[in-house]
Image 1 (tube, one colour):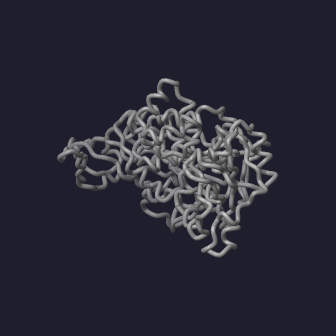
Image 2: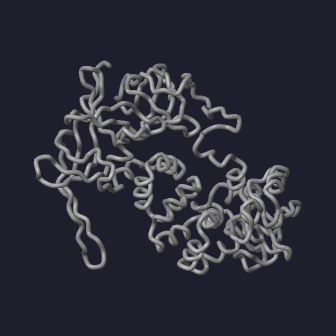
Image 3: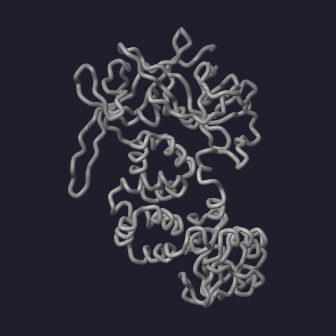
Length: 442
């Protein structure tokens, strides 16, 4: 490697694009894998965790890295597409070292790891040689809250740190959360899923309620249950309130009945009631799939008012695609359901016109006991991304969106495999050479 940087800080590498020699992007760097050695030898960097299309994480040996410089990683272009599985002897720098509380060999006290610097030596191996740390300062209580003070920050040699490789050492989450940057909830969910169970819970608990709710909705059910049950009950109830009602109801279905009921009792009554209604339906019916919080408007609402509602940032694209027109009350279950209006139709009408005058009355609604197959065929027939669900008396109960249908149609492990049903990796248009075999070669 010609002219490598003297020192590269790992936290700054998170999310960097990874390119082949021809300049085609093959993925993004998500973590750095190191192994600790005996006799105080610097930890050896053995490879990178790279996310390739299909959100699959694969292992890239450092022997195939030709350059880490200029805000990018250059490789030989050969990637083994087998999903990365961390071995017992391996440690993830971003996932497991950042925020670890360790001691200094000079006896000067505890410090917290804020970053790790790796360097390439004359043998062309990469090693952890420096650690950026901050003096640990015990938090103090100020009135009714915990005050946190920041200690002195400095760089030390890796061999001057005690406890860097101890899995059970105290560890926070601020550094790893900072490395998430502006990642979307689905990407953060992927990163959490790849962490150890202990670290996954630590990092998830450090997210605020809204972000954690968004991330939980993107995680496999077993991860959702693991995280929620490790939170304090009051915090778990707050997170459930922040989730989409259908996702929260699905998660409560996975908990023991007594636990679910206790959390429902801790929630605000107006937040718990929609979940109780959803939990009465089988999860593979329209009632179990639907959200109880679609866009609902009165017929006298103007087009301008309707467009202002669907522009709300918290709405998903599927939920914002249609408005449902009903008689009061406008909270589900509503008054009589009159019909739906697509956002494309709204955009073609004058802003002062009433939404009641452009209702699409040609599309029937589904009942809450409609099966998943019936819902899927209905949406496909009418090219819908959301569909209304009404009761026998014509009251709107909620709406099913296409993302919820896909969650139930796709294999249960679709978030983990990154593969189509036929088993082929979803590699998109980026050219990635797939190497046969499953070993980590040089």
